[in-house]
Every structure is written in C-alpha cells, then in structure tokens.
Amino acid sequence: MGSATSLDVTAADGSHRSVRVSSPERVLWPASEHGPAVTKLDLARYVVAVGEPLMRGLADRPVTLQRLPTGIEGEEFYSKNPPRGVPEWVRTVEVTYPSGRRHPQLVVDEVAAAVWAVQMNTITFHPWPVRTPDTDRPDEVRVDLDPQPGRPFRDVVTVALALRTVLEEVGLRPFVKTTGSRGVHVFAEVRPEREFLDVRHAVIGLAREVERRMPELVTTAWWKEERGDKVFVDFNQACRDRTLASAWSPRPLPGAPVSVPVEWDELTHVTPGGLTVHTVPARLAEGGDPWEGLHGPDPAAAPSLDAALELWQADLERGLGEMPFPPDYPKMPGEPRRVQPSRKRHDIPDDIPG
Image 1 (tube, one colour):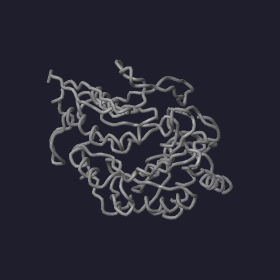
Image 2 (image 1 turned 90 degrees about the vertical axis):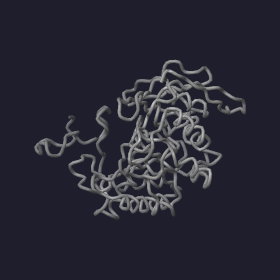
Image 3 (image 1 turned 30 degrees about the vertical axis):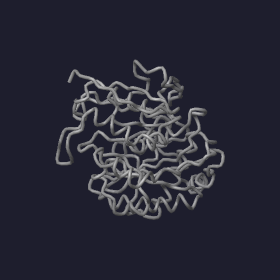
C-alpha cells in the first residue's frame, strides 16, 4: 500500500503529463454482489478512459471534490477550497457563496487534473452550473428527480419524460442522465444572462407544472414528511453552491455506479445498476457520448429562460409564492418560515421571520 505509480496523461495542448498515484492498490469500492473491487489505480484509469466527455462537463467550471480517503466505507468530505499541493498547471476561480463569502475553487480543465484529483482521493466531481468568466450566471438548468423510498425507477422515468415535454414547451432542449443512485438528472443549456435566483424560480415553475400534470406521482414539497412515496423535484439543487454529480462521475455507493448520460429513447429500459466503473468505458467506446451536443459553440445563442420564468410568474398570480431555501441560506425575501409542518404553530403567519 506504500507504493506509487504514475499515469501518462495527454494534456489539453497535446503534450503529456506524468501524474503520480500513490497507494494505487488501495481498495475504494470493496467487492460486493454489485461488482468486483475497484482500487485507486482502477479509478484513475477510469477517469482517463472517459476523459473527453468528462471534461465536457467539468472544464471551465468551479468544481467541488467529494473525497473519501479510505474508500466508500470510510469518512467523506467535500473540498471547496483547493486541496494542498495543487499543481501549477491547475487553475482556480473565485466564487461567491450564499453567505456572501468569496474564495477560490478548483477548475478541472484537463484529464490530468482529474487524475490528480483522484490522487487526492476524489471519487465524485461536482461542477457548478457556471463558466469561469461569470460565476454568478448559470449556463445550465439542472433538475434533480429524487424518488422517495419505495418508488420504483420506472416511475422516475415517467416523471422525467413529462419534464422533458415541459422543458421543450418552454423552448429548452433537455438531456438526461442516471444519477448513479435511484434518481434521474435532467439538464438543459440556457443563455448565461440570469442570476441563480432567477434560475431557481424557473425550476420551481417547471416543477410545479409537472406536479400539476401528474399529482399522483410528483411532489414539490420541501419537507420530507409531506412527500409521501412520490418523486420529489428538488428545486433547491438550482441554488448557488448546490451541485450535482457530473456526467461520467462515479458515486460512492456499492458496486461503483456511475452517473451516465443516456439517450431519451434508452431511458425506459436502462438498468442504472449495470452502469459502473467496470462497464462504462466500453459503453462509451461503442456508443459515444449522448451529451456531446448539450452546449452549442456560442453561449449567447443558447435558449432563453424567459418562457420558463413565465411559469413562475403565472404561479405567483395564482397565489403560489416562494419556497423554502436550504438550511444554510440566510432568510430570503418572501420565504415561508423554515418550520417543519408537524411542528408549525398555525397562529404565526408564514411571513414572520423564523
């Protein structure tokens, strides 16, 4: 376990970088009924194998690293500050957090940087939905469909297909991927001209529209006790400093599953548990990257978010207001009290701070 090896990785300019991987035999995913063991070196080689499409989701973005130094059965933490020892060829960008605090965050522009992140015990990459020239205006709408316990994957697919229709109705072009767990992520490119709060409001408008169309299956309830066994559309993943696992990222779950882009017509019969660090490179080599066209060459020509925001505005006119924010957020304008419904005192109006 004290040994080390090096991987030769092609850099963005065509040159080569030698990236050291210490403890290459360290087991990150133990063997299980879901698949054979995966070592640190296996993970580094996986990152190289999927490097080109992985970079399409990471490059030019601030990235949070989900690190598990002793593997998936040990402690995990999220690195927002760049780890010590960042190579001089890896850059950073300054971002603003909900508190108003600012500090640099890592940018993974090339495969060698991703391999170095694996050397630092990163398992999952969490890119922000912004580019480095403007870290305050997202260029992606990201929707997380989270099935509550007992809800089968086929129902998540049904909700994803309904969301696809709504997104297309507001002029967006949706792409879909597995999460590496039980849910589905739906992304769409948008023109980077609006702040995070606008994007969150657009996602709430989209979520409520899907909920109206299939109320028996979909919920936008923030509090778990109100969700039942439905599919929760997690609108708060659109908040500043909230990120989803990147496309092609492994997840720290048994069997080394991967969050994998799929074609829409494949979604109805895909088996997420079969998409792992062991199987995904061959799948990519054979079928290519379904998300290659997620972003066009000119961000200014991307679709506008205006029509999605009209859904939010229409809900305001119906009397539907702001939704709760994550607990680490400051109290936001118009937000209802952050009180669990079962503990709520009904003699206190929602607009009283609390």
